[in-house]
Image (tube, rainbow, N blue to C red; front, side, top):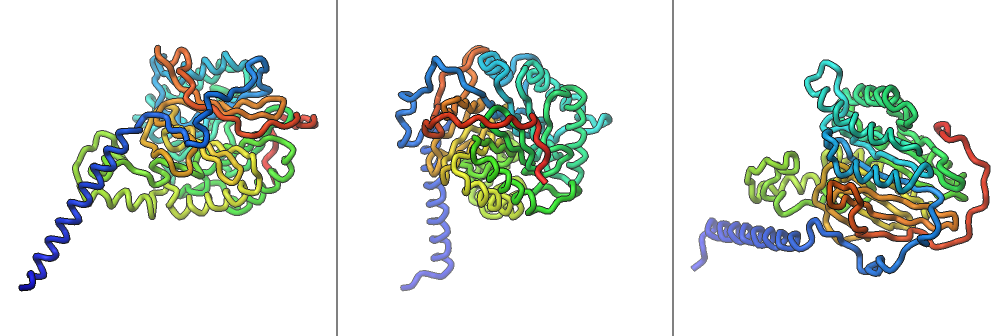
Length: 414
């Protein structure tokens, strides 16, 4: 005797629900094995045996630190203490690049806004820490600095840039006035920093006018003209990521999907809750790689960068530390300046860690470039913690020939 159609459907539904529960439990168990622990790809497990010559100081150091917009304002912030330690270690032969999302949650509001005092206090704490450093200071903007991409975001960006000019006038806020860039900054002989405003491509509402394709042509020309140099390209948005903006979610976020917006929003929505991660993975919010505007920007930028092996692209946005090597290029996510969030191990990543910290790029006169991972140690980061990963990014080669120093701040490429 054949079973009723409705009974078959209920059985299939029950099997699907049971399968989903088993899958979520299995995912949760796996995540518990590696969350908040550094992951290093099998190919470089011997990283601890490799180190630069301790007797030779770097030619120049670059600290890339993203998403510091929620630093503590009472003098106990571990990242600001760690940054101070880096400054003392480095001296003036260095550059600090702040990779955007400088003020949470929505950038710098107007004077009469109720959130102005809290936003200004956080930003002042960051600027005070930066102001102690005698080397170069560069700030970029991120989506939160543009009022989380809302139509009035350009006003927020201009307000923040003006605040930096007033309170830390020797710092560079690049590109100026919300333009897309690229802008170049000569850091040392044979070392060039190129800055992009990636938020320009995903921003809604008013923004400075520019042909959306022209910046990529300018970047292509700039990199072609500087093949003799080592180049760091800085932008807020990652081009590779094993975290939420790259479509990676925890098992918990499938059951409590609202925690992706607010970590305390524990509203159970099993099964249905998986639709939000699926949506953000396939379609995407404006800040996700899968969103059409972000996807187009990413595709065009990678098309350029893949032509120039050895270029380092540094970003923030995702609140963790990640390193990828793709097509001979080096891609960093250094977005845990004040918050941390889940990052999935494996895949194409060489290194990931769900922890506060930032990357330091150490450039040596003999042509070596070393990536160092700096994380707070005990005592609120007054001293750096144990180094959890370092890697020589480029093979040793003879020192680059001397070049005529360029002006400190290059003009926007025309």
